[in-house]
Amino acid sequence: MDELKGASVLLLEDEYLIAMDAEEILKELGAAKVATAATLADAERLVASDRFDLAMLDVNINGEMSLPLAQTLHQRGVPVVVATGYEMREESVGDFAAWLRKPYSRDSLEQALAAAMKQRAAGA
Image (cartoon, rainbow, N blue to C red; front, side):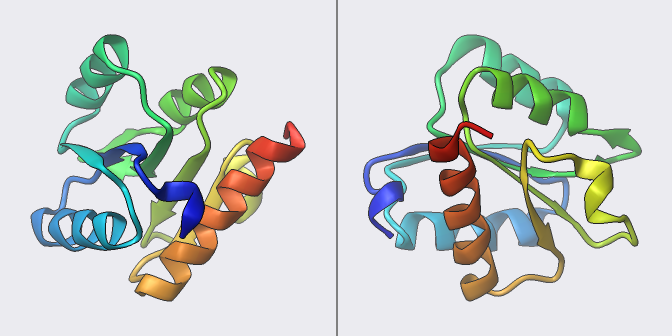
């Protein structure tokens, strides 16, 4: 995936095995750096101290919703993919992020990343 080559990615995921798998896929797709956070507070600290080319956020992190962080990143021009295993309507995410349903495959993750990049390019 050319858009991800050399990219710095924020990964917010509270499930350890899912985070490991997602990090591996992101690196296989070309990400140079994947900063993983298991809590919303950790992700917010990372966002405050670093710049990211893309963010992949689990919607529900230990009962806290990551959508406000997704909106902040979007406003900064960072493409965002939100992932969830819960029954949520895609409309609840808004048009500022690409949607990824858990459990996801490498292909579905790649499609969501491409959609997020396309949204950014289109100025969504």
